[in-house]
Length: 212
Image 1: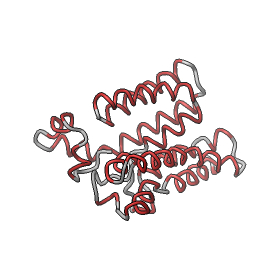
Image 2: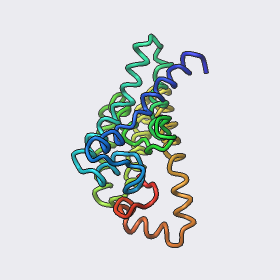
Image 3: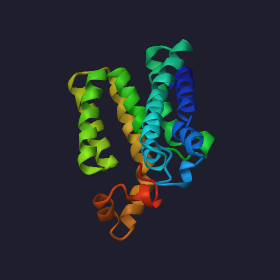
Image 4: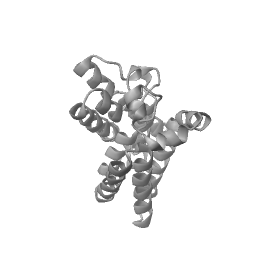
């Protein structure tokens, strides 16, 4: 990794660390998302804990963070092969924000924003399919997995640049790492996996552990 790439990632991380769901929740209702619902600082917890409109607003603002990181890195004069990784830094910043003691979301909105920026038609199709699965299952993990797997497949089939494919591939890995503690807890909890798939939204209503 050269110095410019490192700078690009740092810029992205700092932008990604701006927690819009937390800001929206504080301004709208004066609440700390880390203390309510799923205790996850993400758009879905904002939706359940603050309201539909506020949740959509938080999600859109989060989606713009990845794009903003790319634009900021380009403004610094970085080359394409360097500034593209600012998006990866934004995903990491969203999941582990320095401003909130490294307690953030999963990065789904940020990666969605990056996908729309770099591969709009493919991202739109993946988003539609993912939202359709979410409407049927109410399961964010399953729906986002379907959407991002489809996106990666389309990027590979349509022979996008390797940097783009790796950007989203690594982003998916970061998101998987962020939900690992919750996944382990589900496995260790008696009937945890069964209860989760039976009612994925229970954690938001009952103040369960992070699952957004």
